[in-house]
Length: 300
Image 1 (tube, rainbow, N blue to C red):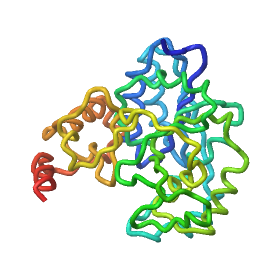
Image 2 (cartoon, helix red, strand yellow):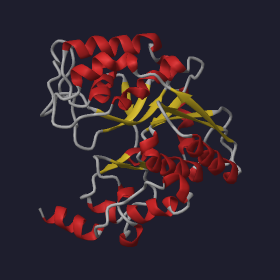
Image 3 (cartoon, rainbow, N blue to C red):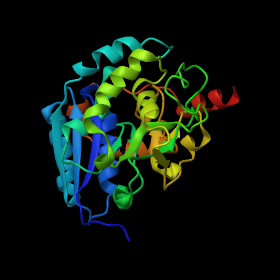
């Protein structure tokens, strides 16, 4: 039986421009949470409109579940040095917002256990089932990355010898983290990330920095908690019902119009269609048949 005695702290970092994905993530999270689990959703952002926050509050109120929302404006200037050095090392440029999750240990010193998830998820599992992991001495639980399997991988330049790392150690995705914060070196996390960043280049800035720090200090959980998929993957179209879909890459499923919906697209638009039009008035999905896009990529 899942423990529901403690408050479950869930952390999400986002921006106002990414509010559609955030709404879908939070709405699906709320729908699948146990009604017996008291939960606090911590929304961290540099900017998020009052109307958007009111809509999330409305989702929580309508659910009737013991959930509350805490919004915190974050300052990411502490990561400027890391961001300037690491961004642009590789083909893909990353927003400074990806470092927001690194603030959690110091911004919430009283929280001993929490779950972090990116704002591009479709949640289909009850996150309260993970509360039992708070009793473990392991500091971090995660899922091995979909495309990068080991600390030393093609395209990255992590100096494993310098950091005394096993190059074949498994590499986790930082989009879904179960954090036993009571076992973290809270105050040292950001200084360590800055120090490591000065000494090596990484392909996925916050993710690789966390992997260096937590090598051999994390445990794997079932991949259904963080089911990472790209648009061309088959089960993107034929969606599983018991997996949390994490949409990788720049092409998010809410980009596609609902009239072409299949699989995950249909599930996503179930939540999008409930959003008041006035708070997503600039939302303009690509007018292109998703099945043709999918077939083209698969045939390649």
